[in-house]
Image 1 (cartoon, rainbow, N blue to C red):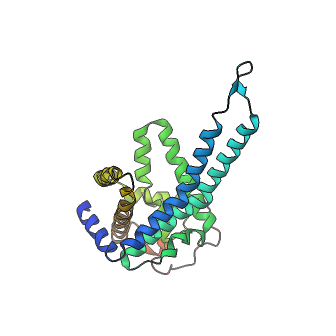
Image 2: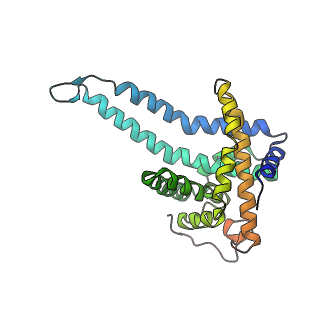
Image 3: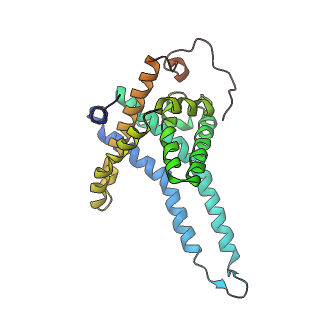
Length: 251
């Protein structure tokens, strides 16, 4: 069993002397992943305020309505093809940061290695979690915790098929979801304190949170390997006994 205090302590050690680089990674990731979403929401909210024609109950300016839909579609595609690779890249950055200084450009590595395969695995995982949230909030939270290791597994080996990644994540988080949930809750105080500082303080908490989650993944991964539940070669941690299939299934 792991202890969240130890994970947080290890995260602080990993960030020692490298905090500002990690801060830059999380800040830039937030800007890249959330910036377009913010612009899209501002545009959508502005243009949804067009007057309606009482006689027909339709927008007075259908061109604006079509433009809003187009911008929303572009935003969704941006999330898939830009946002998701950034999530994997940031996970890879913090995993490597545990073992030593990680190159800043690692956050963009999701665009370099098995690009379509990793975003396919991430997208289907997000869809599964979203469908569970449509049922009830609690099942959605459980599924989100169950698949919380997916970005880190893809960071280790983006060539693993999505179905296998989710299977490994379920195995790694089996019996641990409650503890992982409490670990996330333990950062609420820090985020509330950051929010009091005009919200800017939240930015300074993000590296600490990301480093802690990377520490959790490394612990769960190593435990799964030590108990023979997971072959390190499958994650690319050692050379595989045989080459990976050239075209494994994406999803």
